[in-house]
Image (cartoon, rainbow, N blue to C red):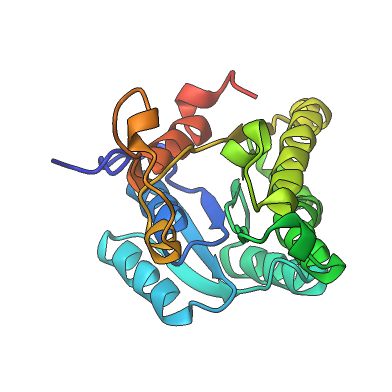
Length: 241
């Protein structure tokens, strides 16, 4: 069976997508899914260079253009430089998918202010900085899309993740405000809250599989989330913001 979101299409032919945290897991699936729709893709990573290059190779094997870009999403100067490099390389930007995030597990009384600021900078501040940096190109595109990511922590809170919950809740509010501010430019802004997804990150951290608490009785897959992104970025999402 073909992974969700990986059917061949042409809805993004001539368009350019920038995907952060795109070297693995959900980010990788999103990059591949948008490429399957014909998009050229900027695959952004902080440090997983070889994995990011692997994603670029997969996209090129599909007949689409792609390139790896490096940026620490906690550093505004790096975000701005990355955005400039992507637009210079591809000549435009249509789809901005802000997936990169830190999801640390630390009990509240052990969270230092430095930890707090690092998570807030990476998860929340980066959405502000990246959107500002890419906004002129998205306006020029005339039909831009911005996708952000919250999570269960933003809606319910979660033990040992106070800083993550605060950052993700902020993303929800910022996304709603951006949808209002940018609609006049034809830019649709949406936030996805994936729920429990089966990724190498979760496995590596030893998180408890809460499948029994999920109505469908299983975790989601990265490509199921990628299918949502593709739908929101494509013609089916034209009236969703």
